[in-house]
Length: 460
Ligand code: AMP
Image 1 (cartoon, rainbow, N blue to C red):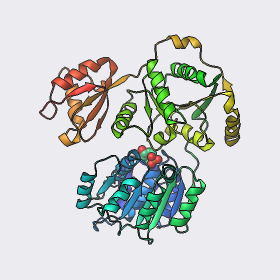
Image 2 (cartoon, rainbow, N blue to C red):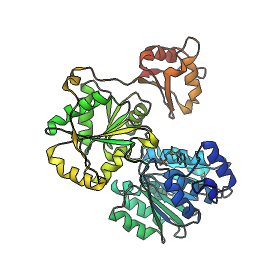
Image 3 (cartoon, rainbow, N blue to C red):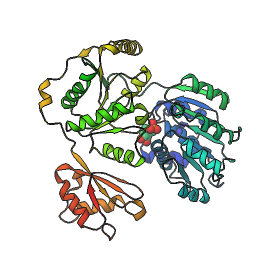
Image 4 (cartoon, rainbow, N blue to C red):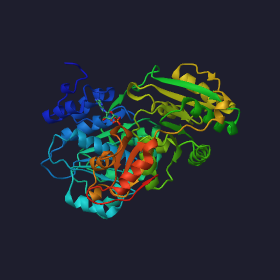
């Protein structure tokens, strides 16, 4: 038996069998190193990033420890953002689908409070949520954590960076000290170590190498003459590489918006993602980026962390990040799971000192490359192959992906190949279709029927 085989672990049969059906053949490094300790009920601190398989590492720990027959909240998983909480809950439901009647509930800010109270009244085994909202529920007495015996802090560094320290403290105070605590974090600044010392008992520390090696991520450096020249360099790089999905990282919220607006003015398919966006706009931006009808997401590190964006073609640093670790983490978002990815970084003379630090950190020298030919600026900006159609109905109206696919590809419809990702929300659904059949697809949706009734649909 291979050491990285899940069957080495003391996991119940149902979980092991389900892992096979999920196609999880062997453990990722973070799973291999942390799971034996997690399953021995030890406290564990693991340095792990999105894409490392960290969710399954603590998720399997949560599921193995759970006693489904006791219908009370036994595990609490705290995450910095709603997106991450949703992903974590989804992964745990997937991992636990072979165990009957497991109830996983998400409690996040930005969502109406009332329905959450209703769901809590029905009870749950596992709560996944953001600190602010969990604290609100505790304050109102709508959530009790008396039976929690496993606490997980996911992306602990992000939660602290986002200012959740006091909420975390007050939540943790309400949980029995006779518990197991797991902490996952991409970085370990002093503040995290202090928290760990306070809330954990003789934790085992685990550090894994990033899943990427230099051969899958090519780093390219480009020199801009000055700050004003950066945008021109960015346009040249986008026109030259034409990435289907690229994240452009900026260091400030204001800059993300400015860069996204200017790129849009030049005809690129670009949107900004930052913390000041309304939840609805944020959801919509992500939907469009993930379904490949927006090619360029201009984001701050805060906004982009925790997003499980598979197969990014390119990560572009509009500047080098303020901290080298953050820069390396950004680059690690491309070229996931063996896909080839490119990392492009724009620097000016003023940032040369940061470059020296980066070279030192990576132990390699990175030389600026010449810019793509300027005549690329005269060509029209490249466009994504898909567009998004929004339907004014979703899960609450009992719509399912199959209904939408059926309406589009039914009699005289478009082909299945021309339909991309379908994403359902409570009252909305989004479907990506090939740009060249957009209008026809829209007419199929607005003129046809879904679940026996008509819904409004529009191109966004
Ligand atoms: P995470 O780092 O938790 O965001 O996980 C990244 C992705 O890897 C998720 O889509 C998981 O479903 C997937 N994954 C996690 N563990 C494994 C594994 N052992 N084998 C294959 N895929 C995995």
